[in-house]
Image (cartoon, each protein chain N blue to C red):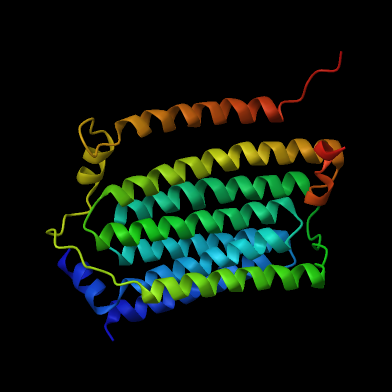
Length: 170
Length: 109
């Protein structure tokens, strides 16, 4: 077993452990911190796949943006140290049953499928290549989704301001 | 760069897919079991991340940068979703003084 495989197993186990802790911890602030650690672990897997740019984006957007936003809304909606209510056992049984069935079905497909490795020469996952493909307007370019996504971001920004704004009492 | 491709020969892509599937299942469990809307949001983030991981793994496997471009788009959509969703949550808390998702059934009545 190579060193990168061992690293993959360690980081993957960390990601899964922190993911489970995120879902099943009873204190909501700890859930946010476990989510943060799980997302950092995913950035580590990106680095193992030699994608430094995507790993940096993962840290900047998820860890620096989304988790901070979630922690802010925890402060806005919870009193500190409050415990979450315990869950119903019947509800839990059906949730675990559905999730396990889905996992078994997909694992069956994953291990049955015959993967064919690509014969194309390896390309460098550099920022230059990603950026060129992102704003390319010819075939296999992504300039149209790029523009659509920019409009989506703008409308989400304005929309969240309008939703959370306090209306003046007449 | 060659080391990554050789690494994929040493370690099959099934491992990456199974890791993504497990993370996705954890997210599904969170959405189904938890009643706090913020924890449901965190579970949705976990699911989005598992799909991102799968796109990145296949991007290396097929020697194609398209997967990483789609990862970037997914991150942008996730950020927009979280911004709007948390604004709605704050508004819900202001009217209900709770973010229990069982209270969010006003459209039924």
